[in-house]
Each structure stands twice: as C-alpha cells, then as structure tokens.
Image 1 (tube, rainbow, N blue to C red):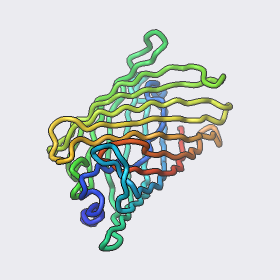
Image 2: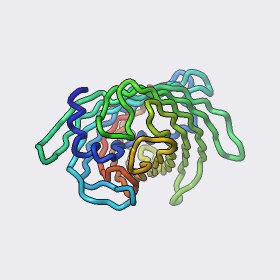
Image 3: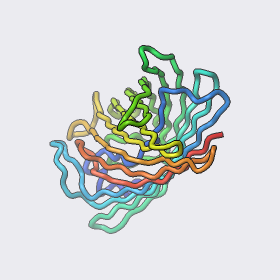
Image 4: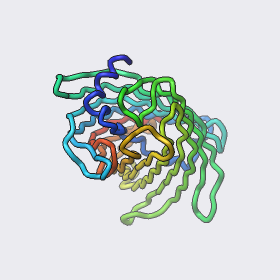
Length: 270
C-alpha cells in the first residue's frame, strides 16, 4: 500500500475526493431468498482528466486512470434477513509533471446485514447496517478514509414494482448516513435504481447515485459531493448466470473528479 502514497500526489494533493467506481445495481428492498446467494463479480475501467472545484465548475487536472475488480455478495440467511459483503481491488495510474505513478491495492472490505420490514401501501421497506474496513491510504486526500479506519453506515430502502415504457419494472431507492472515523467528514448518500424488464432474459438498469460530505473536516476547501449517472443492461445467459455491461459518468460535484467508466460484470445465482 506504500505505493499508493505517491499516486495521489498530483490529484489527491489538491484536496479532491476520489470516488471512482460503478455501483452494483440490485433491488435491495427485496430480501434474498432464504438459503440462496447472489454473487456479482465486476471489472470497471475509469478515467478522468477534469475535476470539479469548490465552486462546482470542472477544470483540467492531472490525467488519472483506474481499473477495479469488485466482488459483491448477498446471502438469504432468514426469510427477512440478508447478509451482504463487498471487497474491491484496484490498480491506478496517475500522470503528473514528475511522470507516471501507479499503485495496486486492496481498497476495502465491507460486510453487514439487511432486514426486510415488509410492505406498506405497495412499497417494500428494508433497513441495512454496514461496517467498512479501509485497507489502503491515499495520502493528501482529505476526504477519503485511511488504512485501518472502520466506517459505519445505516441505510433505508424503499422498493416498488411498477410499469415503465409499457413494460414490467421496479424502482429501488436507498438513503444512507455514513459515520466515518479518523477525523474524516461523515457522509449522506442516496441511490435511486430503476430496472426495466425488456424481455424475460433482458433487463435495463438506470441508476443515479450521489453523496455529500458533512460535519467537521480538515479540508480547507469545504465539503465534497458527487453526482453520478449509471446505465447498464443485464442479460440472463442461463438460469444461474447473467452478464452485465454498462457504464457511468460523474456529471456534477464539488471537490471531486469528473470521471467516466465502463463496466463488465457477471451475476451468479445459486
């Protein structure tokens, strides 16, 4: 993880929050069936050459690229209780006046539990609690956690089945508060997902995600925020295996990079 210190000298040293990555798009308001497991293995390639400043305007920054492999898993422990876990390994390259600097790190390990509360007026509701252990330090980034930090997150999900574009669909909203340690600012984040079933074996996923840092912080430029749009398609290849192809872009923010990326994922149900 020592190599990570140098890579952020050109970008993170400016006080930017680096929140690269595509999110797993799934319907969290619905519990995983008891005894069943969903495993999502995804590979994302992202780049950025511009960044949003404290005024929300994008300006050129040192070019940065990242490749990330992420594993997400959830298991139906009880009829209403789902165990969840996630881990990510990334390889980054940054260009600066002194040349190219790279690092390869296990970024974090995350685990928790999601409890389905039931349905109220057609809306399914669930609560989730997560703990995240950061395993890589990015020196100079005042917003990102440091190695050894353990953050805690509480979230609520709201899900509905509906019709979009004349087809069966679902919507899933997640609102969360992340309590961060190590003197880092806490975060509020929200994710809205819509899934449209184009056919029995083909689903289109649209997702909007954003976060805002709040509370005391040591960043002289104020808080950080990012607003991302995600689009992907999931194709069922067999009863237990699906293929996801998609991408995302950061279209607004403050003190954060303006990144875009493409994603390839495999969903395994067993």
